[in-house]
Length: 379
Image (tube, rainbow, N blue to C red; front, side, top):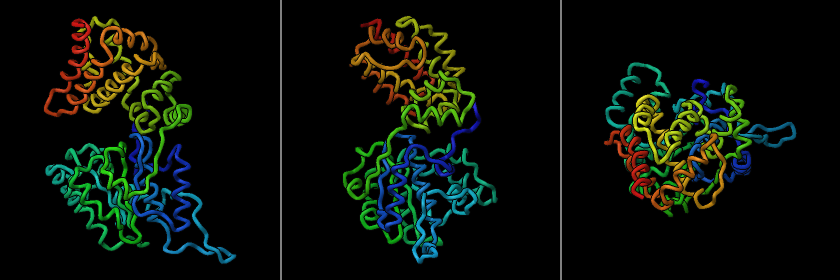
């Protein structure tokens, strides 16, 4: 597989499949009608954050006044594209632009000290290290209040400020309430962008104060075409599997590709090939050897939950496309042994267990298969 094909949203030069959304934003900007508060929503990994940073770069790079053509008319931008060589592109990618503020879950105290030590030593922050730092479980009111001071500081070179909240779903109630006034009355020349994977879970007062922009997953054919260009060594079968596993999310597809997700998924589900028989030694060997890295474990957990949900749904519809040969047969073995209702309950139990950082996740993962086996035998 290709090394590091997954770029951070702020680093990406392209955005696939959201031309209509970009056109809407550009037209509003050119007509001086761009709203001050936005809610970018849709499934995770489809490009919401990429679009947010793309819009931020565009806004922060615009001159205070448009150029005038030979005919005395303003020359309006034709796209949101900004050259990689533009200083604004680099400063946004590094999150050092004075006109940009990004609100995420705050770093734990020891991580803050470690990060500050690097800065004080004049060292460049590694994006990969920054992405993997330990954070709090939610965006807190202190994160919002600290960020809101940004709205009252001197603006960037062209007078604009952009605040990105990624993701708004992670705000606790106090943080959400603290944000309300800024959303209702953003300062002049300010754009606040909330990114949400599940907008229905946000406070109604948050949703009502933002203009909503919904982004949809990519069609399979479009997604496969992009994957071909980014990872040329993928087989036709792998491309098909990645498209199905990622559910139209390019970000998820690239992450799966980087972590050999198709192979991990196939090995994982193949543990159930003789279900309800289960080889415990093979299961533990898989868990120890293949899932030894935390990122791969998290990926496998997410894929297992997703697959169990598919098993529940397809037990009712009897439809669905195979991700790998014999997958449908394995599904039928499970459907014939465990009721859909109990499968749903087990899936919910696993979701809670996977989220519990105090538990041994390798054991939790193995127990997931053992629980399915016990349920089949007892049923």
